[in-house]
Length: 322
Ligand code: TXA
Ligand code: MG
Image (cartoon, rainbow, N blue to C red; front, side, top):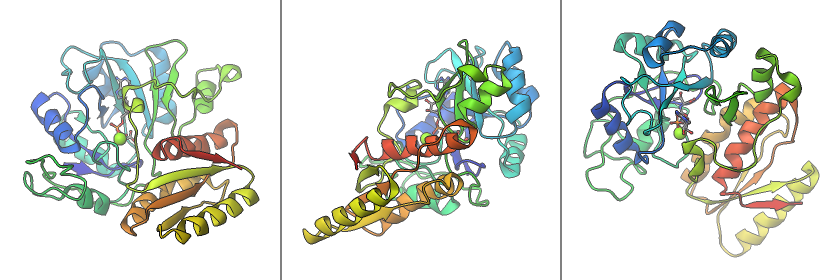
């Protein structure tokens, strides 16, 4: 079943039921080595998934849960391999969304849920996005991406249609099995904020040398159907380069879409990023020209960094510097 969270919609299954989790992977066309995030409704349920809850895990849970932070911890043997992509660890998140927590409580079990999009595609931030991608009603009703050319690919059983997702990009993933904890995927909760809570702010830096740190980060991801190019530099130059490339490409008959946010309004950029990519695809664009956000450090800049991480990967690191 698909359900809303404050970040993006998830496609959920009982985390302890290997068959149910396998069906989620099949519907998404997700590689088996890419682990799912397991969602809980109260922090004390961490103990169902991990044998040891370290003091730093408690500190981050107190500071950021419920909320958009996923912590990687050692897994219990009871958590099936399919849920964790064969890893000895499990990613756990307590979402802020009331509806998500009500669903998890009603399920009576931790809920494994990757984002509710076909693997590699933009994440869904509205119920309509999930419906468009998968269709509802089980096998035989694939949406435009759901089929991906594979016969028999299933639609989802049901969509719990709630509000649009408040944040709009996926949770921060932090690996608590290493010292110091390492951010594997940037998000709304920043590396800087995490370091502050753990008393290590002087060593905090956004960590992105391009190497894939978590299994999900090695795949081309978040990608629209259209070719996408990111234009990076001072805003005035970015805007004139976008105008130049737009008319150049339209001159040869290509349909060009533009993705440009206020360069420091990271909150809006995060909230709208996936919906805008989807709308540009739906408009039939062949090429998307995206303006990079302004770089900024510290807690506030971290969200811009998280959006840029998605933008660069959606564009397959296709960048023009101006
Ligand atoms: O905001 C979110 O996190 C959303 C909502 C539904 O909660 N979920 C989400 O799930 O984005 P998904 O599957 O699209 O992304 C999970 C990420 C992947 O990059 C995966 O590799 C990483 O978390 N991950 C999960 N468990 C892990 C583990 N044990 N070790 C390393 N990385 C892990
Ligand atoms: Mg995802």
